[in-house]
Image (cartoon, rainbow, N blue to C red; front, top):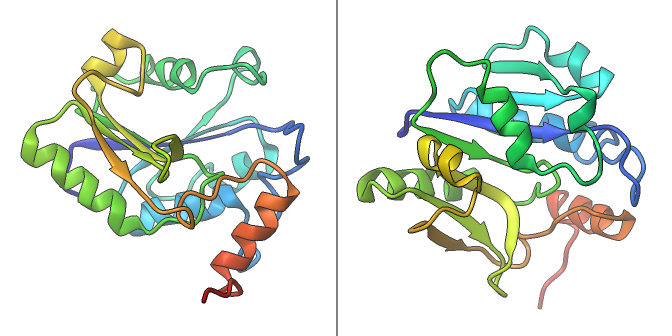
Length: 195
């Protein structure tokens, strides 16, 4: 691991547009939360899982490389900002990591080498952060890297002076409804045909 960092995967029950999207198998009988965490752990990134989903609390309560933090009820609503969830978790740490790395499980189609490149860039430039966007320069949720002290001070994942990492549309698939889910599933299974 190139940075003194801590990964974050946030997942809550009660999705409105696509019920049970966080526990429905997407690839190899694994759901989007399992895939996101395995991607981190396999690449040596210690990850915090903040969740209120019983299945994941049972599955990850003693998993190596995973810090399970049960999500308090007041941080489980539709309008809750991920920033507030991360800040709540960080309050329980005696020693903070230099950087936090948020990966949204609803964006499952990107390659981890992109994150590793971004982490090296942040380290080499001593940058405050970097976040991924789609070709239209809209945040795609794949990853956000933020220097912890700046994140706390600015209360934002979009820090002043951050780099922007542009990814293609395929990597930027974000699961919000059944259509998105089926497209992501086809992409991960190699069933998307291109001319």
